[in-house]
Image (tube, rainbow, N blue to C red):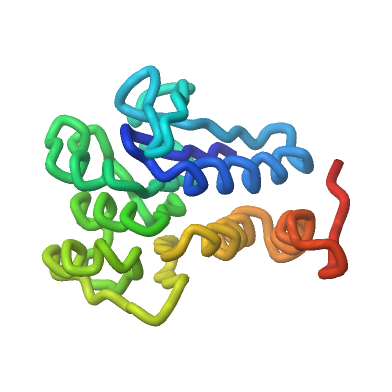
Length: 191
C-alpha cells in the first residue's frame, strides 16, 4: 500500500507533518506501507519557512492507495495552475482521496467534489462554493465513499483515522490514534 501527501509552496506546516507522522505509525505495523511526500518541485517551502524536499512528483498520486492534499495559502495558486492540475488522474472508486482545510479547493478544481458536500477552512468557504460545492460549515469531517475533507488543523487526526480505517480496519485506526492521545486518554505504545 502507498500513501502520498501532496505539498506545494506555502503549505501549512502542521497539515503536512501531522498526517506524515500518523501515516508513518501505520508503517510500524506494515513494513510494506509506503508514505511519500510529493509535489511539483524537488522542494517546497512552508508558510513558516521550512524547506521540505519531496520524495517524488505529483504523478505518483495516480497509482497511490491514499492521496492526501495539504492546505495553506498556496492552494490559491495551484488551483489556477493548469500544468499542475492536469497531472492528476485520480479515481475515488479505487483510491482514498482526501484533503485538509483549503486542500478541498484542489479537490474541487479536479472535479472530485462534484455533486457532494465538503468542509474547508473558514477563509476558503466562498472559494469552494464558487466551484458549486455545498460547504458544510459546522462539520470538521465530511466523508462520501472514498472522499474525505476536514477543516481545522487538528481535524487531521480524525481524517487520518478515517483513512487508516478504510485501509487497515478499526483496530489499526484505534491503535494509531491512541498512540498520540494525551497521557491518561488511552495510549497505545507503538514504539
